[in-house]
Image 1 (cartoon, rainbow, N blue to C red):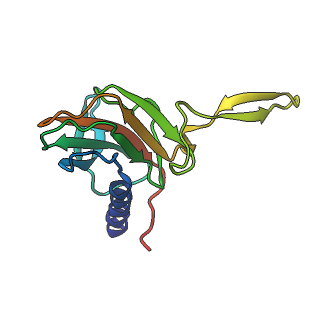
Image 2 (image 1 turned 30 degrees about the vertical axis):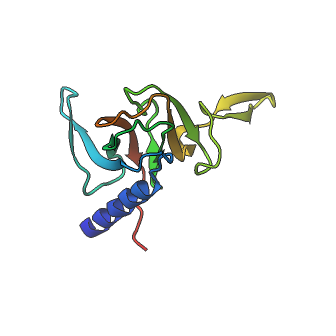
Length: 171
């Protein structure tokens, strides 16, 4: 079973890494890296982080996307895309960055974007329709449209969390 968990995590991490995107910039010296960290908390609620390894349903994973500019010119118009891998669900309110940005969500694999949960029409027992936000389980991607350039010699970081709901078997 341990091998299945490790293999499943490699698949989740590979999916996330392959799906990280960034805008085309004039200077090709911008690099990105993805860190996947397993989050745990002690009895007092103090969190600790370790490189993600074996995962199981209920585990909390924090993705950190770090962009660095080793070039001589600022890089602008970055679009940082963080996928929500299959077998996980986005934890609302955890997509954060110190960088000025416009945060958007996708419910269709990144084909379209909204600034908040799209509304669904729900019919109550009385037959009346009301609109309610789509649940976080339907989010497939998060995107930060960065509003400040990545200066030469500096880095920008973005992070979000997902909860493992099911381990994906290897194919």
